[in-house]
Image (cartoon, rainbow over the protein chains, first blue to last red):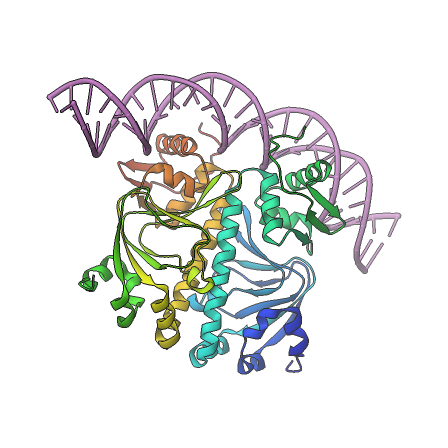
Length: 213
Length: 213
DNA sequence: CGTACTTTTGAATCGCATCAAATCTGGTGG
DNA sequence: CCACCAGATTTGATGCGATTCAAAAGTACG
């Protein structure tokens, strides 16, 4: 497993550049099939992960069985906060075939303790994560499905390419998949969005238009 | 301004214990009246803040004028992520008379760069912040107003004491104040919540009850 | 070809937002 | 002390939009 080609990986996942060499050596690569569970809420830490390919869903299940998608990890780290608390706070399930890198918690904590530069970089990474989460909170506070979709696409730079299913996207947006399909269609007809297979982009600035005329 | 009684402050705001002595010396204390703006989106950094008394609202305004309350800071730090990015990402407005501690960004960054122990503690703090934000995302994904309220109170340990107005609470919960008032009342009548002036606590585990019978 | 899934469309329902207005509250000034 | 005002709080009526339930069509895979 040590035969990981970091050069290529860092190009696809720039965040990996944060990881110091010593910690890289401890990493191993896992392949996941759709539905595979990487970890569950409450479990002691196996490690911190980074998505190479595919999409991992971080899910919390309410006591009434309702499932909430906290995050769709489509690249980059996840379970970062757990390395501090020592337990996972949600379930991680592969949505599609995935490859993920695992950094064992011991090694990760060791690297944080030993490597000052890494600690600084990790602070920047966590701060960035906080910003992303605030953006998601802002999005979830928007009542209109259309505006929520537009807000998401804007936060991704004006266009998105879907990796997983639209259903999973709908869950992340906090709406039902039916609502997503319908609203997407309406936005497309109205000319606000351009939908081309898996690529969806904003065509114009959303003008004040309470309803489809 | 150097005559700050840290012992007493740390008792009321345990997070302040993270701050090393050198950075403490650089802090100053600000008094805010309701409506006072501490900073606005896009402004260059004035510092990182910590609420001592009162309640500061972190607000983002959409292009259509919609206001979203990202956070009600009722103690503890805020604008932590901005120290890394160098700009504020929302507006900060006092909801009630407040006292806040300000740590100038220069000094804060200096402390992070110089003090390894502080860096480690700050990582833990940011990780905790990430968890809180994920909890809020989970809450905002809940569709039912009643469940959202209960989720909030549970995350606060089963009971909350309102500091600011209920209106502000409603905004943080992502619902209108009318919905909050009504739902609160209904939960009280149903016996799920105990409301005593500013103290609201959960009376029993929420049983499966789709509607008020 | 059949199974399991996503995607899509349809129809009915309901909860929350919205608009409106009355009441209550604390604070100010005459 | 009272009149007054600007807020928050509370209640009411209405409508829209998203959920929900249902089902058809499309797609991937063995």
